[in-house]
Length: 243
Image 1 (cartoon, one colour):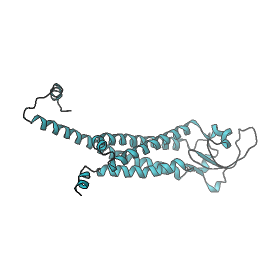
Image 2 (cartoon, rainbow, N blue to C red):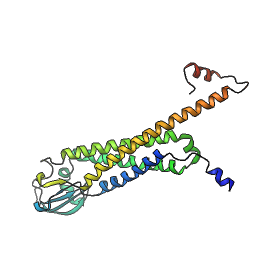
Image 3 (tube, rainbow, N blue to C red):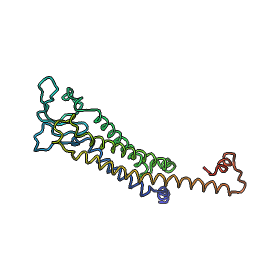
Image 4 (cartoon, rainbow, N blue to C red):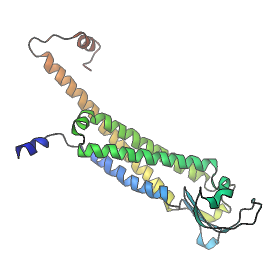
């Protein structure tokens, strides 16, 4: 029984870290749904448009005829943007700004789930020695990852929203409307920004506690009888700090 208690006598994860991890997890769900779903923009049902809906990786058409294709061909159904079906019109479906949006959302996806792995290790305290020793560094890495993810998503939704109604992209843009996948992307970047703020405060707090602990240890060593400061310690003290 005593050995079990001793194993649990270590600092637990702070409330700010737990809250930041929970918010990041919620945002990751919205981000994944937005990343995979083909409803960033869709046409009104009443418009009977040949274009139906699209996402970052998929387009849906019904009897769509590309006016600049030399052979009569109708595109029907939903297909991946890199499928053979859309090979002849891929340049039309995938303008440069949309590839930038894809890149930003993919980077955000990777940063978010990478940071979630780090925060999960911090929360469960595994491996224990490394987490307790480098928690401030791990939290800082998580903050950088989540903060970058929020920035990438902001740029993605801003670029997509600014170009969604271009007349040189989808035909009859006035019949289209931004849909729920785009809304999930907006919500995810807002939640990620809030999580990044909490992680920043926690990383700053952890670093200050680390400095105070190191200073306390140094002061205790200096008060021991027979203590002789080394050349490195004397230089650190002369420079105005113990670290």
